[in-house]
Length: 255
Image (cartoon, rainbow, N blue to C red; front, side, top):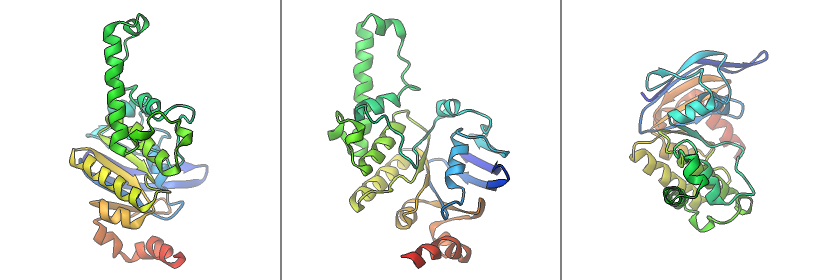
């Protein structure tokens, strides 16, 4: 397994947002993380990406313990993520936002850049080409020179994915990647994620769009009240009576 989460608990004061969560994510697969609001999904992603530390438990990446590492060290190991609340540089262009995501994989030597040497100019040209390729990958290359604030909500979500891809991750953590998107956009992002997995990238995603999750993920983990309710195939999860009661049934009741 690429990623293993073992009995992770995260408490805020006397409240346990995560209470002994365990799961394993296979390499090159798309793993879904679902559950009602407040189930602990985003808290788990924050723990995995080093934004917050677990109160107890362990996280292993390629059999290496990583639960004590800060976010920048995890990013250097190959972790990348998007956020439930989109975090971009709104006054920067889309291309510059993606270039900002290359900082871990593009060492920019100081002196060649200071003196505008040919090697620095060539490197900058190649980095811009790679950044543009990320925008092409998510289908917004035609907005490359627009400020991020000028994009629609769905386009900003795509831009965040492009910026995450710029760091060339081996593990991509997506927090509600298709929220606010039209049906065609949802289909295109699903195709993108499938292609990334086919190329060997591992994806762990949170999403409330159940048809999207069921059609995309090979394995799904359901959280409820900070605990792991079940991990299984989409068919196993969709027919699990406690899932129907805790999550699927609730959504159907409000539909």
